[in-house]
Length: 347
Image (cartoon, helix red, strand yellow):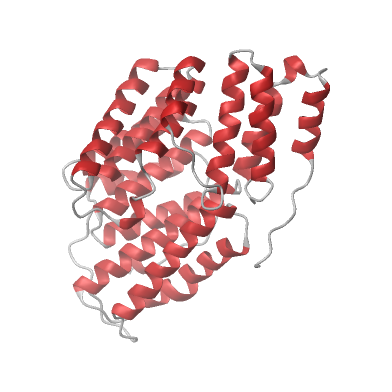
């Protein structure tokens, strides 16, 4: 019964809130049985509808951020469609898929909440997702959920705890999940080490991520479709931020030369965030003209996104330009950064 119950109460915010559920998943990442006898019979069509909803929500989040009507719809799908099905009748095979897709919906809901700065809600969804992945005996999703939670922990200012979470996800799943899933765990570990200023550990984790990606590209095997976003170009783009955080702008710009341009129409938020990171990287070299160019372009791109995280990245650019605050171009960028963005409609 416990695995079919979603809690909705308050949850303490902070890395410590993850300790019990993460410990349980690391100890026993898979339940023995998923079958259940209930009322409504659950079948393949139900599962297909839920996976389609998850795919649609991921694409929308990449384009427009976590603060749009679509984000509310994935939460509605989770609680109004997926959760009631958990109480239905299904075989072990169907049940494992049902718990897995419910875990993915909860992870996406958590990511949308994180993107809007609602970290208590995000934690609740990530903990739910980890429990559902365990019930579905899906190590790929469980590893990915824990890695995503580690990324949230970095953004909340707890990189030490994030290192432990990312390493735990990798070590527990390393012999059982797709190389691309493991590669993302190593990337997040590298990001956490970079926030701690540990260049050697960050470099080791990043190299491991690159090696795993090479394995995945040579022999993709039976990897889940939802991890397809993590490509060598995505790794290179994140490596720019890793080296920026390490105070190594030359290395950051070398990595940027390896990252192909992503279409803003499909990856609006990612493109805008990358531009803000490049702006702050150029500022580390004292290159104000290049920083202003990237900063202005970032503001233009991110004006189409509803994302508190994107706003934070833009604010980082404004703060980094304080030494040049008397420059009229910097004042103009700061003015544009403070201007309210239009709200995205369903259209």
